Image (cartoon, rainbow, N blue to C red; front, side):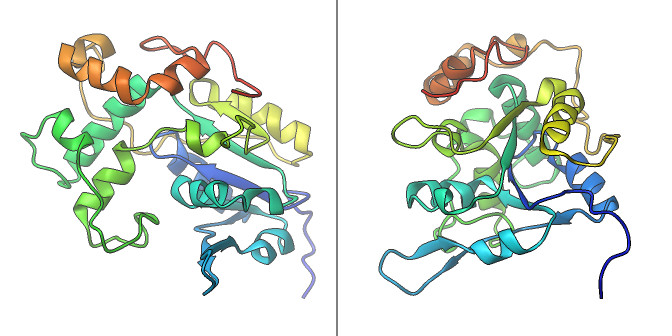
Length: 247
């Protein structure tokens, strides 16, 4: 049956979702607009190369198709991301504030010992049974939930091995609503954005990010997420100083 109402998203759009970047707010808002297809996945083809994007699911429906970062990374590594003609976007967040938020979040959920330190959390491995897909695939495993929230960098997801961007629009979390509205206008979305704020961290916001981490933790963060910090020009708390077109 044909829909009588005007389509919010005029063409299929891919959203590459990272943890702790306002994803719950955006997910709920898109759902309220009937404009979201959640957990679009990469399926196994049975061939030796293994994985490909389910392009027909992306291209048939004029909605936003939500890919978790781990799915998109696998597509990038296989060179499959270029097979989709749909526009794409993602939201990035300052690693210092994102890691702090993610660490407090996994502790509040009981996925890691309350007395565990950040270094222990960062070193949490995958369970070894889920092939690193997504927390939705391995929802039984607390350690995978910790791993997928903390143990990633946006750089290999958003830039391929040649340094080319894998998404069309990179939106700073620090100006989420404003920047998302600009992207929506550019892509012809018929919408006025009003994003709610879900899952706001309950930790002490008066403690500065620099003071929150120990010297050893700061060194580890700088080592692991250094390429991301450098690529976007992040300081300890602010938005990216620039959005690179190519690395």
